[in-house]
Structures are given as C-alpha cells and as structure tokens.
Image (cartoon, rainbow, N blue to C red; front, side):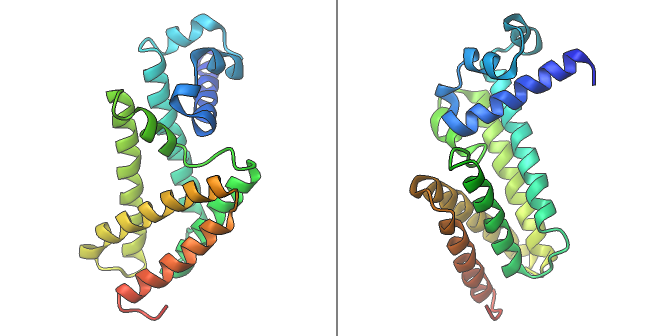
Length: 195
C-alpha cells in the first residue's frame, strides 16, 4: 500500500472509530485529523466532498468489516439457534472489550444524520440492506424457506440492533446474549422447529 493509500485508509479508520463512539455530530474534521495523524490538507485531497464523503466511506468500510467478521463467526454453522447465539455472544464480547464505547458502526449515525445528509442516509441504507441479505442467505443455508428468509432476516437484524443499543446503555453484554437466546427460540418455534 502506498503512502497516499495508507493516509486515506487511516482517515477512513479514524472516522469509523469516531462514528462508533461519538456519532456523526461528534466526529468533527478536527478530531478525524487528530486521530488519523494525517495532515489537515490531505483530507480534502482524498475526500473532496468533505466530511460527508469521508463519513459515507467510513460507514461502508466499517459495515463491511463487521459483516465479514460476523460471517466468519458463524461460518460452517448449520443450525439456526446456535448461529444466532454465536453472533450475539460475539457482539457482546466486542461491546464489553470497548468498555461499551463502541456499538453498531452504523446505527448512531443513521439515527443522527440520515434525515439531513443524503449521502450518509444512502450509506446507512446500503449497510442495512446488505446485512439483511447476508442474514437471509445464512437463514436459507440453515433450512429456512427462501419465501420466509427476508422477513425473518428483518426480525433478526432489528432484534440485534435493539439489543446492541440496550446493552450499550445498560453497560451489560448479557442483554445481547439473552436476546440471541430468546430470538433463536422464537424463530425456531415460528418456523415449526423444536427450540
């Protein structure tokens, strides 16, 4: 990776970290520059669209990394219940390791800026649609009929996002684990399987 690419990647990573911790409004350009160690002028060189362009790229990058990480966590798992519980345990472990500073790389920004900043809304929408598609594909791999997978994926994603928020606010990772266990049972029952 060349120096310019390293600087750009450092800015994207710093922005993603700030977004997870302080949201869109708290992630000022000054903080991004400070955290990335990049020269002030280089942000506008790499991101001529300014903060919104950098934030959009950071959201998509952070989202893709998490999606890849969680896909690896459940790789090879063929049972729906253990898959959901494994994801929730991993999310809880990450949240606890960050001392409850981190959370979903997208949710805070989606709530804060998606109504005001079209590029950010589009990045958030892309992230959530890609997550739903990944979840639906994993559900089909565990035997959920394709006709039901999209609806169940929406339920799973909504539950995960809500549980992440509650776990962060309560400072209690067990909220995620309980949500995963309960969700696994509910989904298995709704699909006519034994929980």
